[in-house]
Length: 142
Image 1 (cartoon, helix red, strand yellow):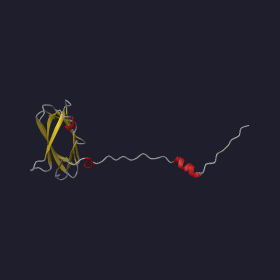
Image 2 (cartoon, helix red, strand yellow):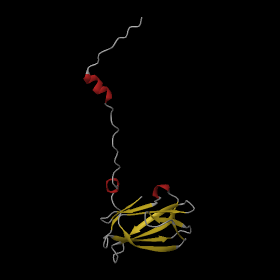
Image 3 (cartoon, helix red, strand yellow):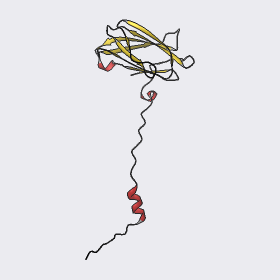
Image 4 (cartoon, helix red, strand yellow):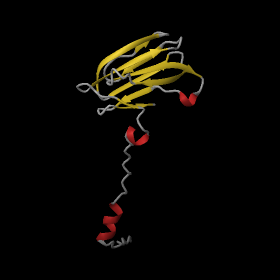
C-alpha cells in the first residue's frame, strides 16, 4: 500500500521561491565621463571636417563609420574629409600594424575642422586608432 504525503507550503513562500534576482543593468559611461575632450570644434550646420595628414611611410586605413567604406591614405600624403554630420566616428590604423602618434590641431581659421597629424611611434601607450566628434563639437581620441 502506497501512502502519499503532502507538505503544506504557505503562499508567501511559493511567491518568494519564484522571484529571481535580475542581472544589473550596465550602461557604459559616455566619452565625456571617461576622459576630457582633446579639442572642441564649432560645427557648421551640424557638420565638421577632419584632415588626416600622414607623415609616416606606411599606408593608413581609415573609415568614417556609417559614412564611408574602408579607404587607404598613402604614406606621406593627406586627405580632407568635409561636411561630416555629427556625431562622427572615425577609425584609422597603419596597414603594417605599426603604432600611431596622433597630434590634433584646430586651425584658427576653420574652427569646425580638426587636423590630425599621424606619425610613427614605438610606444604602445600612445597608439591611437579612433576619433569621436560629438554633436556639441567635443572631440575624443582613443
